[in-house]
Structure formats: structure tokens, C-alpha cells
Amino acid sequence: MKLTEEQKEGLGIALNEATLLGLEVDPQRRIAEATFSVLALPEAGPAPEDTRVQMLFEPVGRLAASLRLGHWDDASVEVVTFSIEELLVQVQSFGGCPIYGWEFFDVHEKDFSQWKDRLSIDWQRGEGGREHTISLFQEGDERHLDICLWFDGFLIRNAAGNEISIVDFIAGGRRWWDAFWAKDPRTLGKGMYPID
Image (cartoon, rainbow, N blue to C red; front, side):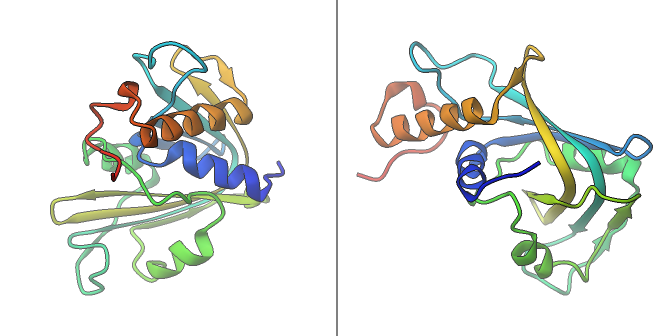
């Protein structure tokens, strides 16, 4: 799967401030599923009530994660090891925290390099599955979880299970952020306010 720089930027916009609800890997089938509650608006009308999307990554070649008992930038804190089967439980233990930073795809050289020597898990399987990466994290009280997933392709589904094109997914996220900066009331209630 080819991803242009424009698509990666758009995916970052669409995922910025999304809530990470779950992430799990099927090690036998080399498939990963991530569920997010995203900030998105339709072309017209009210904001959708259910903004969950699922990203299905396939094939997956590697997953690395670092669960640390302390602040993200403290190199002295304890690292907690866990298995690939425990990934979903560890992600969900944070209660669904937002991800932010505007860049999530193919930024592993910058992100992963900061914690690659403090791994809780480094699962690798088979040939391929390493064309792209998605970098995610969760922050909690005295805990931090960094994740990097290597994969070749992905698709996106809405809460009803229908596939959404990358173009439409990005457009929904762009509409939300444009509306946010325009102080559109449909973006209220998310705990964020545009700067005057």
C-alpha cells in the first residue's frame, strides 16, 4: 500500500485528539485492529452520535511497546513486560486516553528511537509487514505506554462495520478541525477551546 505524504498528513489530522479505545494483534493471522473514537463531521448536518472507527492492519510484521511506570521522558523508571496477548488489556487499562501530536504514520524513526531501549514487548513475525508504521501512546497517572506497529496496508471501518475510504476519513477530520477553529457549536463539549 502506498501512502503519500499528503495522505499521512491528512491521517494525522483525522486522528489528532482521537481516543484510543483498543488495540490488539492476532499473531497467527498477522492482523491488528485498533479502535478509536475520532473527531469528525459530515458534510452537512449534526455531528454523528457514534464516532468510533476501526483500523484493520494487515499484514503486521512487528509490534513494539514500552509500558513504563512514570513520566514518558524519565529514563530511570521501571519497564513492565507483557505478552502480545495482553496488549488489549494494557491499552484498555488506561481508560481511553486521547492521542495527539498530528503525526502518527511512518514517524517511527523519530518516536521509536526515544524508547527502543526500554521495551515491554518486541513481537516480530514473518516476511513483509513492515512497509509502514503507526505510532500511538497512552498517558496515565504515573504510567506511560508507547506503541509502534509495523504493517503493509490497512482499511478503515465505521461503527456500523462499513468501510470508509481514506479520502472520506481524512475529509471528516479536516471538517471537524476547520469547524473547531471557526467556533462551530457542533465541536463543543470535547474539552478543547480555540484560542481567540
